[in-house]
Image 1 (spheres, rainbow, N blue to C red):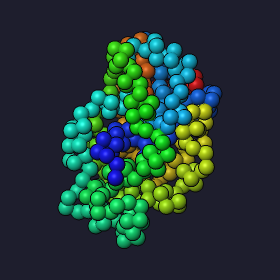
Image 2: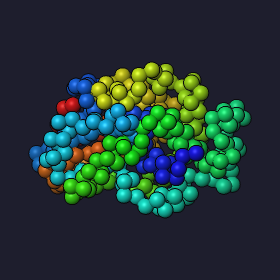
Image 3: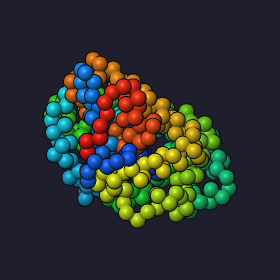
Image 4: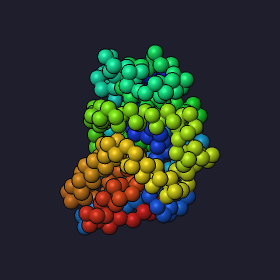
Length: 298
C-alpha cells in the first residue's frame, strides 16, 4: 500500500489512469505543450505538466519554458503539495477517503471484489472509499517503473519558484480537491475503481495499453492522439467524474485566469496537469471562447 503522502499527492495531482497528462491537437514541436493567452493588459502561459516523472525525464525544461519562467511575475499551480503538512494530509485522507462502515468488498460487485483481491492486499485497503483506492492503484504501476511524484513538474517548479522568491498562487487547497472526489455519487466512484481494475488486468482502453510510455509522448509534445480518446471515454462512460474533475474545475480556473488577465501581473505562468488542456472544456479552449488570443507555442 502506498504511503499516506503518496495517496494525498494523488488527491492533489490528478493523474490516475490518465497518468501522463494529455494535450490538445497540433504539437508545435518535440517538447511538452505550452500555450500563451494574451489580453490588452497581460499574458498568461499555460503549461501542461506530468505529476510524476522518472529520472530519464529530469531534463524536461526547454529554453522556451525557462524563458517564460524567467519573466513570469507569478506562478500558478493546482495546489500546494510541496509545502503541505503530512499530518494535515493524513487527516484529509482519513476524513474524505475512508469509509469504516462499508468496505470496498460491500460496494463492488463480486467479480470486481475478486479482481481487487488479486490486485491488492484487500484487508489493508478495504476501508478506503472507491475513489481513494482507484487513485492508489492507478499510480502503483507508474511508481514501480521509477517515476516519482516529488520529481513531477508541478512539485519541482513550486520548489524552484519558492527558492527564487517568486510569488506562487494555487487554484485549490488539498481539502478542496479531496472534496471533489468525496462528493462523487457512489456509482461514479465504483465505476472509476472498476475502470482502474480493468486497466490493471490488461482489459482497459487500448490507448492506455500501448507500448510506448506516456512520459515519452509528453516529452515529445505528441499528445493529440492521446487526450481526446481518453477524455472522451471518461466523458461518455463516467460523466459525473468528468464533470467534477475536469469540466467544473477548468471553468473555475478559467474564471480566475480571466480576472488575472484584467488585473493581475503582466506575465504569469500556469502549471497544471496537461489533461486540463484537452478539448472544448480545456483551459486553452475556454479562454479562447472568452475572447482572448490563444496560441500553442511549444
